[in-house]
View 1: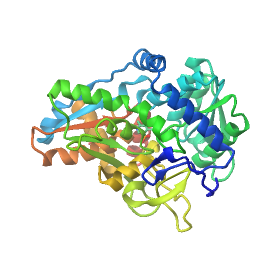
View 2 (view 1 turned 120 degrees about the horizontal axis):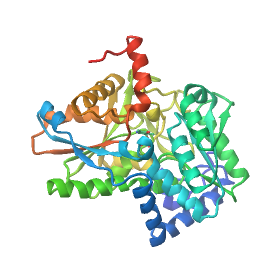
View 3 (view 1 turned 90 degrees about the vertical axis):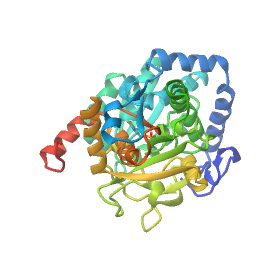
Length: 403
Ligand SMILES: *Cc1c(COP(=O)(O)O)cnc(C)c1O
């Protein structure tokens, strides 16, 4: 990556976003942006996307009122947007379906993607299998070792998993190698990015594909309650599930938007990934946004109990919403997330992803302070089945207790 920025003015949210990438990538990104602009309002493209969202992933997902949890907390009504009920158990498939359909329109034959914990790799492998495309997933060698089951899932669906062996052997190296493969063979290859991050046009494109969450939630809330919610709350890693929910409510000034970041085990450097709460503006992975820096200004080491949230930057639109004061960003610790994980499991019989548990933890703190006629929508970005073994392990080590 070079700091020698070539900037496409369309790719900015205030001062955030842009295309801070090696020169060879600029024309490739601009071709992608042009094609996306052409297809995003195309009736045939929209129909095809909606078809797969409905028939492949099972949308619309319900907006579920947690009566037990609400009565127990004694304040605002808590609704869950059930993204956990999507195919593969999370919101990620909304985005991989959208991008793969675009890749198909562009005549691409091969998909490359990076993955950290493996969730995005699995969603990409599934949709590539669906479209009959060759799929290569780059994953840091350390993550390949830690996430064996997800590696196997990707392979079962026909993807090739390449272990990135350079440097720290984690997500950053996987991104570098995937970008390298893209530049080598850009005519045939589509880079399928996993969150609302990266250079323009990815943050816009991923937001648009995820905005189905907000569109449905808005309609469902109007139908069930006859009015809009008072709060929309979502966890923030790269920020895609959050921006997908928020985007449809940004214009409604009475709807408060809250993003919840992982406070991990401590707010000391290296103990968390609360980028918007504790970071400062800076450039990494090709875009300008808030980021967590070490003393040299490089991306800082980050940590969270939930592998889907430990990223030292964040989608640029969130940085802009923060500076505007339109959205508020708070944090929840590992312990608060695990408490919320058990509470939802025991009160409602729904086991949430540890990522989503951060949003729930904040909602559970907020609800009792609000009047009973207030409405909170929490984006339940994923189901917790993938986290059960990790929780069991932490309980057996004595780090957490089953309540
Ligand atoms: C990947 C993931 C996240 C974090 O990604 P965002 O882009 O911040 O939404 C959150 N929840 C679940 C269940 C995930 O799999």
